[in-house]
Amino acid sequence: MQTTPATLEDSHPADICSARPPRHPRPDGQDRYTISEVVACTGLTAHTLRWYERIGLMPHVDRSHTGQRRYTNRDLDWLDLVTKLRLTGMPVADMVRYAELVREGAGTYRERQELLEQTRRDVLGRIAELRDTLAVLDRKIDFYATEGNTR
Image 1 (cartoon, one colour):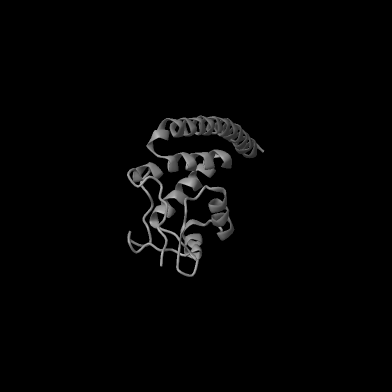
Image 2: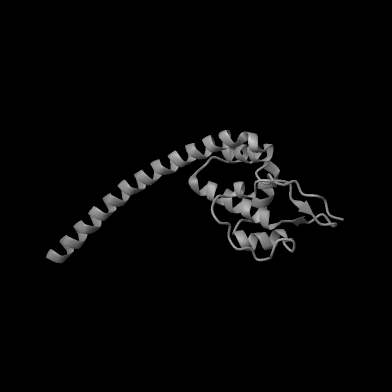
């Protein structure tokens, strides 16, 4: 006996991640992963997966008749997006808000867009800072390469 999973906008699957999703280990319909299999696929810890579910960052995760979590390819796609959002430095509260907006449906597209645009601006600012830092490192490396050859 399996429960019916709550999904993230079935009518708009591309909304989960605009980039092409990674290849899945199993085809749709045969995609029932245990938490340990998801850990192996994503590099996230079981603790993190449970925490994501507890704080509302993960949608409802289906359970087996014994109560074990059963993740789908759709869940893997969502986790891929969440992992990328974490890499951007997006605060967890904003990621949870984004997940809530996705669950609320198409009427929240504008607010989702604004959240992602702000994150994009933040990422571009960080990239500029890193480019400046890289330029300093390059100058120092060039200095040492030049000085090292004259001594």
